[in-house]
Image (cartoon, rainbow, N blue to C red; front, side, top):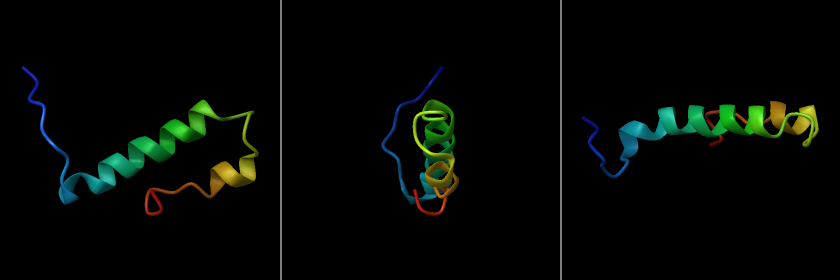
Length: 44
């Protein structure tokens, strides 16, 4: 069973990983590689 809750500061790294990886996959070939390379977990 899943439990839905609000994210908190402990979730920041995981959310950054999800966001940065999904951008790199979704926008490959659309957005220049140089821009995608600069999307990092720490920046997200």
